[in-house]
Image (cartoon, rainbow, N blue to C red; front, side):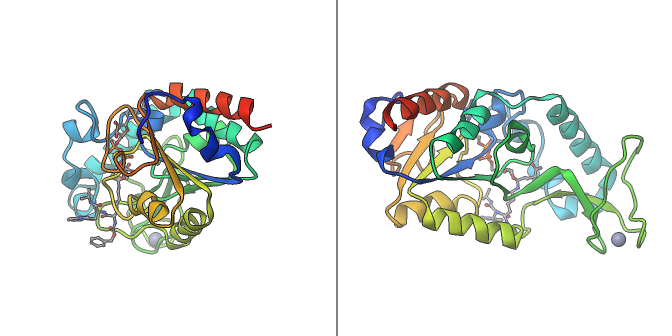
Length: 248
Ligand code: BJW
Ligand code: ZN
């Protein structure tokens, strides 16, 4: 079943649900001015992931990779959460348990005020030593790639690059939330990067109700119980409004 807007059709799905998981990707932050990865004007249209988002790229040209992340930090620091992020915060007034599993590294769910946020791919604001993994706090004055005060190793961005494992405790929490939820809401993700993309399919295999919000169809769309076609900043506030009206 697919849908073009939040109609009463989905009400029964949400009526008795207590626990909702919201799984997000770059699309939720698009309306905050943060570029997505795989859109025609997205990050991977301008840069090659193999040159920037893996450990070999960093090892062979740390300054270039660092500069690219600095540029992205600048964009994110100027950005504000949008109505989609705030609608997700509002879900906490409607459901007993709300878990946000995000692939995003921009920190906008946390800035919007969501309580339980699992950052599967790390954060643009976290850094650690490549050599000894000691966390590192970036200072504003710093130019170029910093070195670790403990061992002199290069400091790397605290994000998950291709070929790297996801942080295991966060992954386990995300999996547990997916296994125990009633509704799995997938928002603004192309659902192509694994293992994160396993989660909506795990939810489907366990018989959870899966709802997708995305202006474009994805690999998930045909299997989702409901696919809401439109931007998150419009569809999520409408969904929340409808839930407030119907779930008293
Ligand atoms: C809107 C909207 C609006 C627009 N409202 N919606 C073959 C070879 C090699 C590796 C692999 C392979 N097959 C599988 C792998 C593994 C690989 C993988 O999945 N690759 C596939 C791409 C093929 N995965 C990994 O490597 C992962 N690790 C791993 O598997 O470890 C085990 C292993 C060990 C050793 C060797 C191999 C494996 C790690 C994945 C890490 C992903 N990292 C990135 C970069 C993070 C750091 C950074 O930001 O720089 O994470 S890649 C990038 O993609 C980023 C995102 O989190 C991730 C997902 O993208 P997302 O969020 O879905 O964005 P888009 O742009 O794709 O989609 C946006 C969507 O929004 C679109 O659908 C729009 O329509 C929609 N949208 N506006 C709502 N307003
Ligand atoms: Zn170190």
